[in-house]
Amino acid sequence: MEEETVSLIVEDEEILVDKQALMNHSQYFRAMFSSGMREATQDSVVLHDVTVNVIRELLDFFRTGQLTLDQSTTQEILTTAIFLQMDDVINHAKVSLTVENASEMFAVAELHFLRDLEKATFQYLSRNYLQLLQSETYDRLTEEQQESVLSLRFGGKDTICTIGSYNKDVHLTEDTPRIMHLLDEKNGDWTPYCDVPSSFSTNACGVAVLHNYLFLTGGFTSFKSDQMQKASLCFDVLTNKWTPFPPMIELRANFAFVGLGNTLYAIGGNKLHGSSGTETKAINSVEAYDLRKGSWKKLEPLPTDMIRPCVAVCMEKIYITLSFDNGEKLYSLLQCTGQWRRVSTVRKSRFVFSMAAVDDTLYLIGGRPGDFTCYNVTTGQWSTLFKTYSEQYLDDCVALGDTVFMVSSNATQCYNVKSRLWDCYRIPGSPSNGYMRTRLINISQRNLEVDDEQCS
Image (cartoon, rainbow, N blue to C red):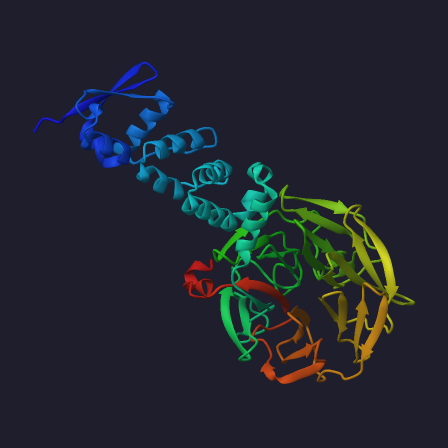
């Protein structure tokens, strides 16, 4: 059967096309050729307000299934496809999203009320957020769009996650994959979540969470602590994928690592020193990793060298405690200048403890004496809660809602700052072993159903 053709007249050029193919892929032409309109019986159709290059690309797409939607062509191609009611092209756009063409997708979706395309674009950018931050597209988005993309990274439940230094199922000196564990705080159960890649040692590394990404960097390459680790890894909670990011300028271990805004801060710690290969030296250097630039820069150093300084973010400020000969001091970081400002003197020297924040109050936990000290950053007042926790060694703490969770492999103890009630025995210690880091991630049930092999 001989195919019936029709000529499309576009910008004074004539393109001969199979009429049935046009009807199959365009509701516009289907309606035209199926109606009693004059165009239904003519052998040519004049198209206005479209370009010949775009029409040729659309016709090629119908033949090959291939269509390039880059920053320069996306709006024009999609606008033409919408005009000609070519649904296949719009569906193709949803699976052809890139960070580079996202702002054009938003513009077309908003102009033509394509909510499905808008939703797909938001979801794509939320799952490629670090790449977005380092692109020009981010600056082309409205503030509302930027906030909406980031909010989609927090569609699950805030969950406590621990990472230890070794696995208890093998000998202490064996370097094996470290398993991250999640806490169901209501049922008091710990469950395995995902392995840290075996190529990365968690011994004395820094762990920080920012924008619902888990960042690991620094530390030592093995339990022997005789070589500094250059590697840095980022875990995306949404995609369950590990990717590398640049190493610090000055390699360090046992340091504070925290995120605020679009920046990660590596603070203090120690590094190998001398010819023995295992001798370490405390350091006071500070550096920041800018997620938008994808690079590190040095900041003003701490007022003193400090190994394992305690750090917390409270009211959008970074606070840290430093030990001096005459006691411990509380400092805050002035983000605008990168300088450290002394805030107060810690009431009682503790030297080893953890710190977490709830609302405008910092909670200093552990060490000696065994009480629980609080500092309100708004009023500048210290207070002490004399009802102490169970006498157990605590590695780290984190705040979830109104409750501070103090975690080690021996015990998990909870203190509700509103009710002032302790829960010291209901939840066991984390199965993660060695000196562990405890952080808060936002995870959905769908993420938990991912196969183990995807966490690699």
